[in-house]
Image (cartoon, rainbow, N blue to C red; front, side, top):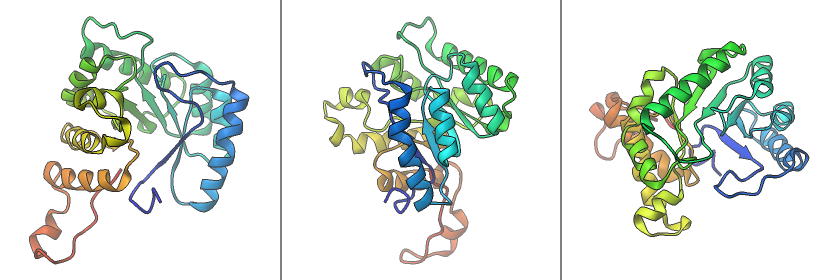
Length: 246
């Protein structure tokens, strides 16, 4: 269903990453994710699959089962074993910013600097710079106010020269702003998707794919000029081209 609605990548994770979550043993995480990755790979042979984990053993098992890339929510914490695995397998890597405590002297400068350091460590481990994606970690090690500041200045991440991924979908900061539970945060998520694309973000991680794909394509049309050729020749009821999706 997610792919039918326009998802270009499926992200699979077996351990919650929400603040206050209870960690699980690697064996249990492997038990959860490997059958899912294998089943999705069999059903969707052409769809890239991401494994969302911080554990090298889980990443290795998922890659063996058919995953194509690794999404590390602690990408700014040195983990030589995970970097070595990614380098050996020659797969893409998402490096997400994270901290144990939301304490910053200069939020934006420190996020950029720590992601830059993560990129340097990954490259030193043998990972192709072109295979690295950065994620500023909206909702991870940041207060609601800091999350909003980060979203307002996502454009600063472009200095890193790498594709940018952002995940704001249904997160608690959106609920704090609008005083709404997770299942009523669709419009807030769509707003952040449009704002992120306007700032130069390349990928968005969402739960409600169809609505966010439409917002992404419309934002692309405005910000990047996607579909302009089709729009010049098509009437109101005419055909529409397919723009970039996430």
